[in-house]
Length: 225
Image (tube, rainbow, N blue to C red):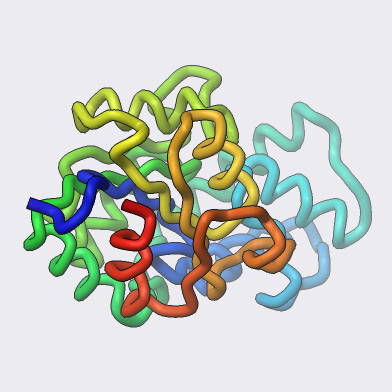
């Protein structure tokens, strides 16, 4: 049994458990090159993450010469995803200590889940490629529920429904404002990591706790219990 009153932990994926920025950055620059747009640096791209693929592509085109029409944006997003899905675990790695923390929490009896705006198929494939899939009882991607994704709290509530654990007994672990908003709307405590892709420093987003490494996660969960 977990040591405190919290019984489950729901994790965001990109920028929280895994550093997927290198592969996303590479796929995005290949898309831009095909449209004769200038390349973006990884530091330029990281703040664009967190709101799904279409928003990422939209922001990238806006930053490299102007926005594109909605119909073209949809086609460019499909092209980006097709490229990324073939190259989504080339450079992507778990953040230091992530796998060890998941193993420890699972060993202590926590139920574990992923709730991410990344597409479902890509999420499952990436977790499997990185050796993380077996830690989770539930994985709910950004296209698993029609029209529902973080910061909509229904995304988290659906994840909790699959886990069978109440919101008050579950903590959200993420890296940006969408994670905080979704957790607050669902009635869950929320922990943010400082090493993710947030456009605003994690300490300024109103989380219940902020951690700088996965070594800090178990005691942070206990403190929230």
